[in-house]
Length: 85
Length: 183
Image (cartoon, rainbow over all chains, first blue to last red; front, top):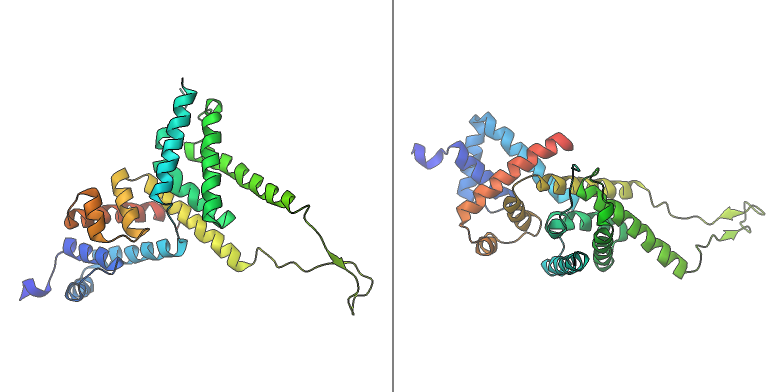
């Protein structure tokens, strides 16, 4: 019975991380909430974690395409080689 | 020996996302941004011998990029002919007064918010720079590109539980770094 509902901090952290990406299973989420009710450390972690997710969302970071990066890499390699002849 | 040295072969991996996010809010066009960054890399290689090592590589690249962005705006401005200031003086209430046509204020609150959020983005990327390189790229794929767990696992040849451990470390390090530098 205990094993069914109670999880340790590392499991709780894992579930917390997964839920930042909406990948936590409903049952695991429930276990996480239960864990959070009595674990202050995990509550703190969880709130920081959500804050980070929020910040990333707000910042609207984009990454450039891998093709573009590859083109730059080649460009630099070529120029760099020429400069060092 | 200078405090900072240049390592051009690592520029793309280390700084391209940073440079891109810096540029995109300023020119608002992916293609233009990419071109400006290409020019920046080329200019940086050409003037690498003048790099004194006083600033960090990234700061130095950004200073070149800034000039490129300014040049870009100069160019499109001169293409249009000089910037025009239109005046009208036949307003019913202010007849005879030369009023500049009302220009929408570009620096209203939303623009400021946008800028601040962009700076937050740059702070996040800066923090990502300081953590394990592989962890950072896995974290980026997952969080910024929003790639599937399965896709990333295949790309990096890791198991899902590896992935979640890496994500956990990256998030913890990132949160600590942001706490120190931003919040």
